[in-house]
Image (cartoon, rainbow, N blue to C red; front, side, top):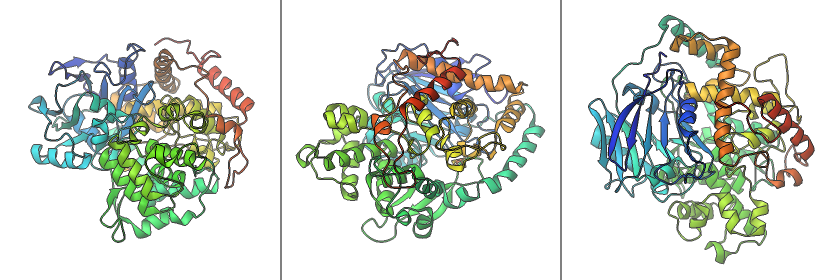
Length: 598
Ligand code: SF4
């Protein structure tokens, strides 16, 4: 298949050795590649054991210059959820890794002392990283670039070293493999960083056809990406707030008291200094924020993204943009996922408000809106200091240690906290959170978008009612679409439901032009379904079934508070019917078990 080299690099840190391995010719890349290697693992595998593979994978689009092809993925058994762990990141790492002549890296074992991996034209080196251990993610990247010259770097911060279960992996001081604990897996292997520099140019099958498609897609993106290019993802905040779907005060409310406090317009006017972008992307959705004055003067960070504004803003009742920017910077430097961090801290605020936790338990008094307490807890979590040691396990595991009230309060699916869309206000998200392959995720389907816009993702003639439970078909088709974009490796913002600019037709055309594989649309869609089936098989082996494909009890019984969806719940019977419809569409049985074996 053109676009791929057909080989990966295998690294065994216990043995201090590496070797090349050929890939089967039908491997696409990304999620498809990783699911083949993860499926045979024992379901008993401890995610923090040396045997858990840390897979970094590109796809056939990587390095081709196709717009949106900056993505790469990391895959492993998740230390947070103990099911399929996956996380994706933009920036410039994917094309650089591709240029080394490998489609991906599979790292197993555990080094005796801290190391980093250095892959370059001259070979593969496992180098001592003792001088980097203890440094934050940004310091580590700076230090490595000083040492190695031109290269692209992935690194963990101290949270990864401390095995915080939601530690992330940082790239370019602002892009992250954010969710499901990739940083903890690297930390468990004593792997501080991966640096790559390559010079090989990847070949595509039909240069002329892909160049023409590139131009068409870029032309369409000018309109589609206008808002995201100007405001970044914070642009979604007002839309979500207006629908009453913005999780606020630990899932009690669906809207802020004061939208302006965190709005995209406020951020743009006061803090955004410049745009940032990824490889081959004219959109530049990233926003670099700087605080010039006040108690957080001097804070600089790429962000905050919408998901961070929600998790460390509305969810914690913190209607203070500067505090959110500061919290974002701390999370990025320490190397923790802002979404799980915000959810875990907001849960503590909620429990303290209910009297289920005391100042003595936590080591400080913290209530909704307490930004100082939030910043302190981020540090305690990252360092596993005091009560932070319990919270470093993520909200679900922490709740199991904190008593009955915490077990009733915690919001998660399969151990992963949801994204910034309340499923009581967007019923498609209820199903999508329940069945998504990594837990309560928003990116493996993007169902929030048709729910918020009212537009069908692929059929302009049809509309979507966000309160309707008739969404099984939409969820299934979107999941299959994104299983492919996560294997070919495309940025989701270039593949937005309804507007694209890359939807089924463009994706198939790019696939054919780059790989040289001609494929019927039905078969192409089936590839996506097959990848989802294989990941499901892995998750079923890890104990996932219909009982796990559900939502926290609060969503079924506690009406949503403030906002346009006030009073909404997820009706259990309708939810279960939608779940059965979804299983039937996938060809899974009523227990959610796939019939097909890959
Ligand atoms: S749209 Fe944003 S995230 Fe996607 S490739 Fe462009 S800059 Fe990166």
